Length: 322
Image (cartoon, rainbow, N blue to C red; front, side, top):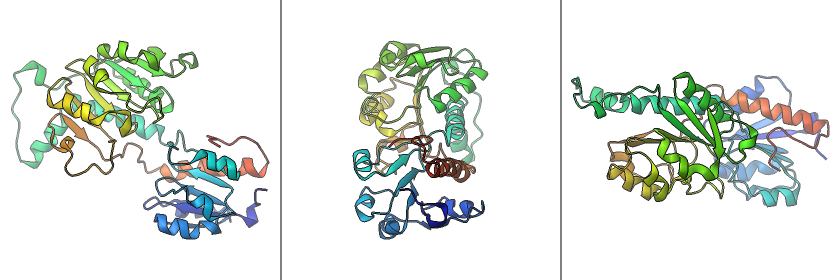
């Protein structure tokens, strides 16, 4: 039985986001508290009926409390949650899919623009107080997006919005998704993910916006990279493990692809010894594609909708996982 509003307690668990503060500003009257570490979460989880969490989650929480009824993920990804254990204990789980679709798609197009317009070089030169001269070699100059082809791997909310942004720049967009019959979602063409290798040679930009699943882990391997144009860039705003990182490093070192713009890597934070830091054809952002000043309120909109559904006894939640 899901507790009523007067009996409910929510635990918000995040080291940085001010979720409880934003929740209190809504004046719901529901009891809540926030923790900032995993140890705090494990210690205080028994007090909560609902936990709102992402990176601090530990599946150990499920064995620490009999009270927990619903977990609202702060992130779209849910690979950290042991879903069979949720089902066994009757705990509901919902993702935050779509909560940062605008932010991630805008970050992806920003990375595409950054490497096309040589912004990383400009920033490096600014730090060194260097006013760069004009570039004579055509292939090394800034470029335009119009007429280029973008291959979007994962045509969900993020990939679909990215497709529409790219088309606004005059790009031709090819989308890959598990079920092409679900529609083109803003792309000029849509194909099944299985068509990846046949489409890679056409792409000037390969942008990863897919979730990490057993099917997508290691999707961009040495074979896939070998099919990309030498002038092409890989952009990853998905998950680091979608790419076989040693193969990517080798391809970048040998100039078999022009470069990569990476918001996520296999191990985060990126280890100090990683060659990716120093490769001149790599641009790195620290998994910030999903960051937005609206994040807390976007998550809370999903939370409040799902609480209302639970109080009405509805079977389905928004972004339901379990």
